[in-house]
Length: 482
Image (cartoon, rainbow, N blue to C red; front, side):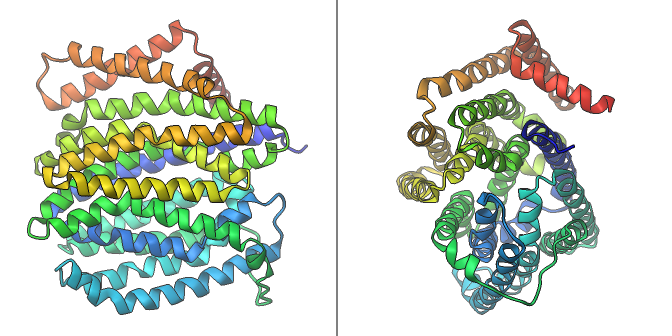
């Protein structure tokens, strides 16, 4: 018997949550070990060139994998066209970046970047062989298989990085981690996906979706710049003090890891579900609002909680060498609470075929962001981070405006879905802070604050009989009983 959309969505959310939760826990464990083995200066070269590697990864997919997911019923020829186009594009981009690596090293005044960047950029070329299979798995909600492949890639690549770090390979251990991770992902996806590429190449699907895909590509690049621009700016401004770049990179990594844990599971099913409902506006609005409530229910306590325990978390995990990353992490987490909502709105707008709106909203955001950086960088890194965080919070209002225009979801309905969870989370963290003021032992303080905050938040949800929590509990209990 075929599964209903609701059953597929529920199963996708379950495996998405398991994937993201387990992945981020393993990422955290690996990050803690590497954080203790490598000094902040060793992370600086990786942070500095992260933007180049990420943009190269955007160029290889060119948005066509997103276009496939947005199709009602993609054919083998669609996957095959994207497969060969990605390989050709990524090969040409790799050759270009290989030739530019001496210029990158000279610009950042770090000679090691010449060979390091050439090696790291191999990871995105290798990844191009798995983009079509990843689109296939996403379109068909193969979240269980995605979870298995992701965990295998993470464990194997993390183990390689730790072994090399123990052998004093410094930043090369992080470079090998990226290359090995890409390789295992490609192999794993082909293992689970029945589809296979053929040498009968027809690029007509590329031409049909070119405009849509180019809008996606530009947006992906803008998002990549948005996520990495501070690393690159600090890499240039603080050439003589690479530990500053390393500290920001460490804080940004934990912040992103935390909000991706929350948003990733929902993100895996959002676009396929919204595409299937776009002809039924009533059901689409209800489904989207439920995703909003679920995101708010999870994101605010998680991110505000991490902000509360930033100092204890950093000292207890990666150690006192990273103490200067604490104020950065504390600020970033406040903005990070809103980041999962951006993915929801992005999926909604793309599901309506309006990749142009998605593109322009991101372009305008990055222009404003760059302007704020130039206005605040002379006041120091903290000022830049505060400006960056405030923009990420308030720019969400523009996405709400376009959601109303596209599917009729009212602004105040959205606020009604978000604000209660935000205010309750803030109140819980404030009470937790006051209750634990007398504690000073790092590990005890970390444990007690997490326990008290979780107890208070769940207690308030139970007292208020919040439906989204009751549904989550019932669903996971049913799953574990099976």
